[in-house]
Amino acid sequence: MKKRLFLLPIVIILSLTSCKKEKEDTFDIPEEEKIEYVDGKYIVEEGLSTYYVVTSKNPQEKELVAAQEFTYFMKEATGVNIPIINDREVKQSYNYISLGETTQFKVVFPDFDYSKVDNRLSGYFIATKDDNIYIVTSDDYYGSGVLYAVYDLLHDLVGY
Image 1 (cartoon, helix red, strand yellow):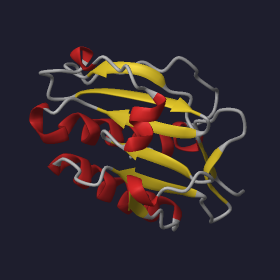
Image 2: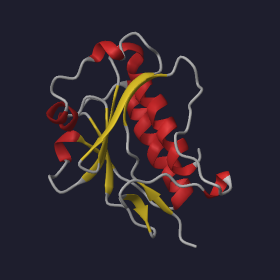
Image 3: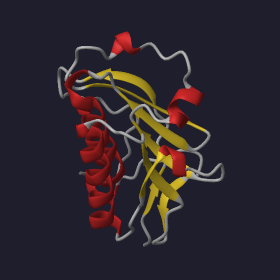
């Protein structure tokens, strides 16, 4: 059976003061067999990916760690290398996971209210739009919220 990793339907603002997270959908299959999905969109399918991890030109310290962690654990789980590029390298046809205040994030969410994630070590905003994933946090804590978000995303995608 070929495993596929699907793009998650995520439009949430989280503050992870508590690490407890509830699943809305459950299935009657073993935990190790569960795969999250939405509308048949895949991050990795049959050993290939059309996605890039995008950082800003000058990412915060933890945003860069988040990009490296995401690509490392996706490669470990799927064997697929997802390239890391900066926001100036993104072509219009690319699918991507935007980490931090990239140009792409600013275009899609021009009026984003950072007060919902300010002064929270693990607070982050994560959303999908047009098959892309956007993750951002405030400037507090060197971008730690983005790193927490990537770990949550990895948990949902590959059980990390």
